[in-house]
Image: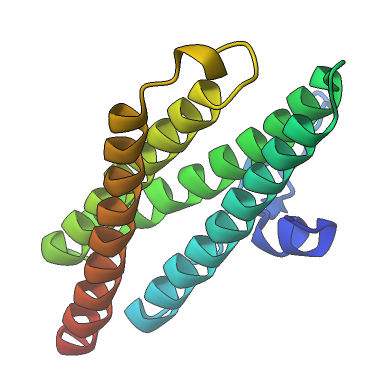
Length: 180
C-alpha cells in the first residue's frame, strides 16, 4: 500500500512567490526537485517509483481478492475505494515519471535514457490495462462467461510485460552509468 510517508516523500515541493505591488501574493509555482540532481539520482528515483507502482499493484490485487471473498453480497464500495486510491497512486507516479522523461530529453540531452523512461511508462500502462481487464473478467457477474483461453493469454501478457519492464529498467541503469 502506498503510505502517507511515501506519498509525501515523492511530493513535489512548492516555492513561495513574491508579493506583487498590489500586495496580492503570487500563485505558488511547483519546483522540480530533481532539476540539478545527477542522472544517477534520476534513475534511482525511477526505480523508487517502480517500487511504489509494485506496491500499488499488490494493493489492487489484495483489494480485488477481498472483493471476491466479500460476497454475495459483494462489498463493491470498498473495492471501488481501493481502486480509487490505487489510481491516484499510479497517476502521481506517472506524472513524476513523465517529468523525469522531460528532464532527460530536454535539459539533460539524454534521448536514449528518455526513451527508456518512455518505454517504461508505456509498458506500465499496458500492464495496468491488462490487470484491470483480468480483474473485470474475474468479477462474479462475468465468471460464468469467462473464457479460460483469453484469461490465460491475458495472464501471459502481464508476465511478458513485467519481463519487458525489468529489461527496460536494466537498460536504463546500464545506459545511465555510461552517460555519466
